[in-house]
Image 1 (tube, helix red, strand yellow):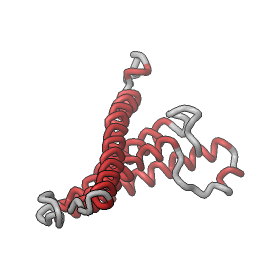
Image 2 (image 1 turned 180 degrees about the vertical axis):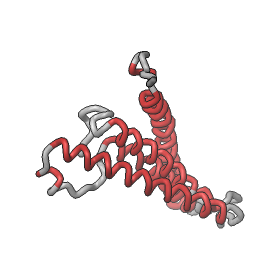
Image 3 (image 1 turned 45 degrees about the vertical axis):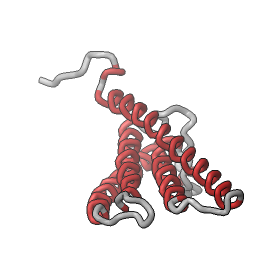
Length: 176
């Protein structure tokens, strides 16, 4: 005897995953905006302090670099979702759509496996750097590796959704 789910399609595990991922995306958009705002504001204040007041903010370079790293790594999963990362698809586009879709899903599975590896290795790197401190701030140097960890996990979720639901799961706006 087999059980077939009879409820609405929007309540199945795939759509729960997709809905949860949309929530994660919204939170991460906020992190990206905060990091970009922090970086831009800090650099502007540093320029003012340096050229108008003939002084300097000791941690400005380090903090602006940290904000930049957080913004860039947090944006990577959104590039995956929108299909805007660089790809070479000259040969793939010559194949029929069914083969293209199969290859797309296989590449998502392979990429998701790679994200598991990146996540796993980054856990060890972050733990290894935890005792090291940043030169101008009393903060662990591991804060440079945490966005890599978060980005790998978030990217993994997007790749799983693509492998499970196909290339059109986020709509026609997704470029392949």
